[in-house]
Amino acid sequence: MNINFKSIGIIETPYMDFAPYQPVEEDNGEFKIILNPEYEEGLHKLNRFKYIYVLYFINKVSKKPELTIKPSWLGSFAPESGIGLFASRSPVRPNPIGLSIVRIKKIEENIIYTSGLDVFDGTPVLDIKPYIKDLDTKEDANHGWLDDVKDKDHLMLHIKGIPHDY
Image 1 (cartoon, rainbow, N blue to C red):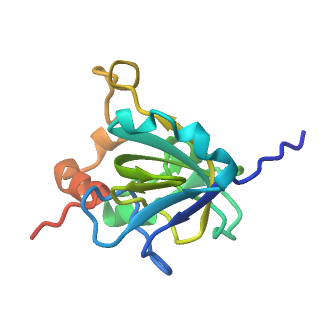
Image 2: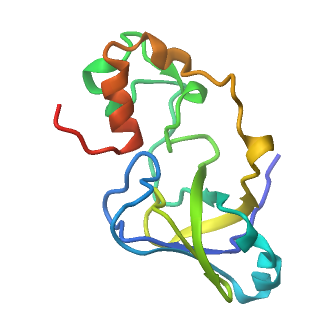
């Protein structure tokens, strides 16, 4: 079955050739979601929320997805057998749809200014949804297979994009 989506806008970021693995809250540069003007009315009261989900089309990936992978960002921490694609956050997927949670800084007309987004400049936006505290926070969430990785605490600093000295 073929499913068609249309872009509702574009994302502007300072990233041209490299983007972080996850959103970096206080990253340098300006991050904007520019909705097509016909969707501006849909932003009414979105500014009452602190965070949003941004769904986007990962349009700059040209690699074919593999079902078992060894995430490059894990380096020597990667499990010997690799992990299943769906147990990862790899952008190389059968349907290259990305999801990020970002903070709303301000909204002006059809433009949402956000905290750091982990996408390339010009990425097409598919949808925006509010992050609702009691619905979207799962107190019993865990780290899954990452709990088995040696030096997990150090690895988590990398995953979160937090600068550190070790």
